[in-house]
Length: 102
Image 1 (cartoon, rainbow, N blue to C red):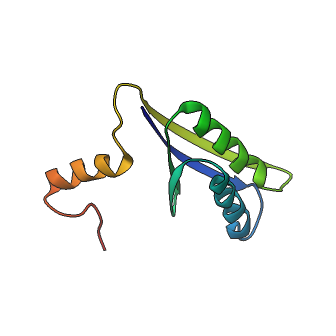
Image 2 (image 1 turned 60 degrees about the horizontal axis):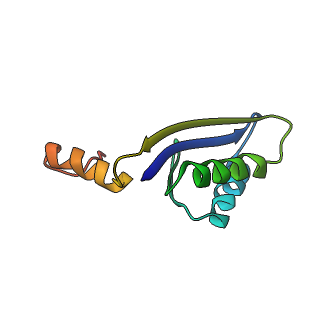
Image 3 (image 1 turned 90 degrees about the horizontal axis):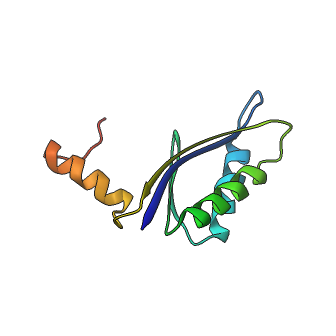
């Protein structure tokens, strides 16, 4: 089983959030998850929903702010071990090119 999620954790405040987001991303290193950060969030892959949710909780609590906004979208593939990279590869196969633009 593979659990894939899109995670966004940020303080609700004015100004740069880079330091706070970095703290959330760094918290994921304490867990057996793979992740890739992009401009809109972080894609996280785990072997189980429990591992994923523990990592998400750590990322959320790592942001030291009066108010923290966390958005989580989960794809819990219970019958297969398809990785996030395979999902992208399937789209690229249909496109006939990399799934990115300039």
